[in-house]
Each structure stands twice: as structure tokens, then as C-alpha cells.
Length: 301
Image (cartoon, rainbow, N blue to C red):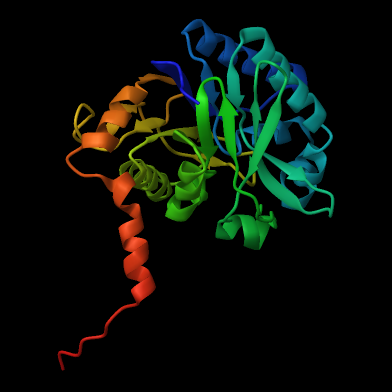
């Protein structure tokens, strides 16, 4: 599927806020989507766990209890989904929503990024590899299925934060037809932010594709899960012919709430894959063949 050229995207540096009610959340999100759409963006990317600000709708007891907040959030999930679907349809945009901890059939929870399309189609990607906090303290389980989303804008995959640090996930999505990768992220330190940012750059380099990172920003002292948020949205590319020498196509200011806008030119990536200074996308299989042969040990004692 050939994406439009150029494709205008918007990646959120989304501030986690304390809300007076769901109506306040609806106004906030509507403002964000409206602003991006007015700027011409066709695809809007919100960050991992941005939906956790909805915990502020509940009382102090729930806010301070990681298990209780997951249960309470399920009561607003239908409204969350309906709001996003309505905004996607009203503005004619695709939205990768802020990820939401969703309770599945067996009672366990998944960190889920919903993808909304203007015609009313809904898809989702669950996080596949969990951080220590998620698995050891929050008890959110891992998803099991990698997906790609075929749209009129092109085909893309979603790597939720830590997933981006494992190259075979993005590679499988690229080989399944993804033309770019979205990375909704949520990090509470500069080290965490840079781990994800460096991973995004690596995925862009080795797959010779665009990688779009969205982030949470700001402090939420009332939240046990997202109390500190550090980062800057970014659009990363392979550093090669016709693209930035450092692979940074667009970068927002640290820790400021705003959209980062960019126009993605897929002809440039096609040229790099066909005749770049290096051909990482083509040569990926070489390492796999070498790995299958095993490693020879050489003693220099």
C-alpha cells in the first residue's frame, strides 16, 4: 500500500494532568486532536500510558492503589473508546491513542494501544515485553500478537516503549509490510528516555524506515504509576543520502506539552533502500545466516 506523499503526522508530548471529570478529559483531548488536524496532520500519535491521567477521576484511595486503579479504569474504557472514535471520524484522522490498561477475558491486564480510523475501524496492539515495574509491581501481563495496520496512509506497526528496545519485533512488522513504526513511550528519567530514543534510532537505521516516538511529560504527584514524566517526541530516520546526517528528522523541546509535526517523504526512504551508502534493510539476513553457523571460540591464553 502506497502512502500519500508527503504524509503529515503529529507526535504528542502529552502532559499528564489532574482532571475535574470525564468531560474535562473530553475537552482536553478534543483540543489536542483539533489542533493537530488544523495543522494538516493525518496521523496523530499519543504516548504510552497517557490514559493514566483518568485515574485522577477517582478518590485518593484508588489513586494510591495500583491494583484498584486498574479495576476502576475499566469503568471509563467505553467512554474513552467512543470519544476517540468520534474524534477520528469528525476530523478525518487516524489516531494511535494513549495506551490504556485493559482487562482481558481471563481477568489479567494488558497495556493496549488502540488505533482508530475515520471510517470507524478499530485495531489495537498490546505491549509485548514488560518492564520490571509493569510485571513485578503493577502485574500487567504481556501481549502475544504482533500486528501491522493497513491504512490509506500506508502500513505501520506499533512498538510500545520497551518493545522498541528489542529489534526482532520491529523487524517482523517491517517484513510483514510496515512502512514505518510508531513508538508511544512513557519514561520517568533521562536514562529511560534515552534508552527508548536510542532504540528508536537503531530501529530506523537497521530497517531504513521512519520511527515516530511520542512521550508523556510533566509531573503528576497524585499518581502512583505516572508521577514523573520525561522526554521529547521525535521522528527518526536512517542517516543516509537525502536524510539528516544524525538521523534526527524532527525533535521537540524536552518536557514541554505540544505537538511535534513532520512530513514524511517515503520516496527518500525508497531511494536509501535502493541505493544508499549502506543497505541495512537488504543485508539484515546476513547476520541471521552467520548466527545460525554459531560462534567459534578462540583462546588467546
